[in-house]
Length: 200
Image: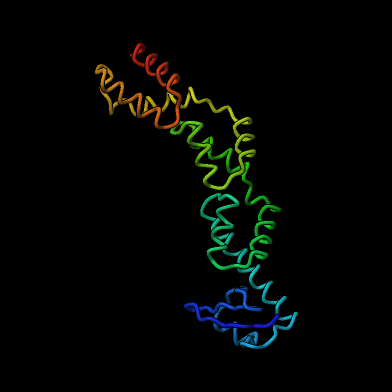
């Protein structure tokens, strides 16, 4: 493993091995491990560096998870942005999954429960997909929940009703359009709004 380039990067240094970017270390660590351009990295030194990066990546991930629950994709993207090697990212993620600190099925279940009164199933599915949750896990989470678009729609109507004059035909039409834009089907919106207006 030949060090072909040491590139300053703020308070850190990018290390290139065999002309490919390998990892980032702090400047003091470059001296500590005796890394120099044009020299080979001894296998034992490389192992020490990888262990250091794993510990650092794990600490970074645990800090992120201390704030709130995260998806696997979120953790991977953040570590990638931190220029951790792919092998270290995979190892950190495997560690977190092993101790159940990241679990995309549980994340999906929690997200569905949290958003059930403010979002349609279509919106929630899209949100979870963007967050990197696998479609099979999203489907499983919905199967295991008692989520109902009908109930969600009723709560959404109750929440937004004061923004519209429900005695005015044009305002009702605007409300229809707004609710459909939130992922509810036109048929469900029509029925739910009619029931709400009849009851009130």
